[in-house]
Length: 217
Image (cartoon, rainbow, N blue to C red; front, side, top):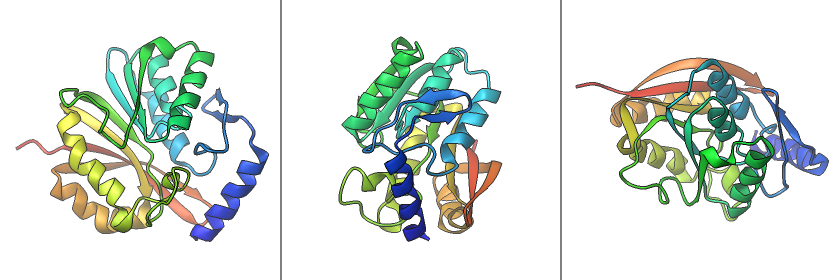
């Protein structure tokens, strides 16, 4: 399955065309994850267009082209966007300028929450993580591979709770099989209750957009 995804991504990379997600046109680069590679970008984008983000604090984790940060900023949110890739941050800044929302977004280069102020709390944290298990050797591979045992996703879930407002939500896209297996236990272990908000089939897999909230004790 991963080989099929890589072949598909290579074709898209060769095309290197601007992306269109929920009516937002985005410049793309070969070194940055293309939002057309899978359904994750559109699943989160669709939920953002349905929510009123005005005055909300939003963190777009792994921002890539910046699509989710742009949509949140457009609706009046105060947005921070993070990515481990300097190329992705540069591209997200460019796209945010094209859509006139760059002054509403603070960009950070860093791995997960490393560059986020420890005291920052968010109403919404958005994450379209890598879909496959494996250790990335390059920043480009980091867009596909989530580490041994999907360590990137499990680490994200462990750390996200300290950056989430009490009534805040995490919106995360994962493979359905993964969600029904190890991630279900990870949700519970880290004190989240999960609601599957949307599902979308793509090629031979089904992806699920989960809304996670902290369990109130």
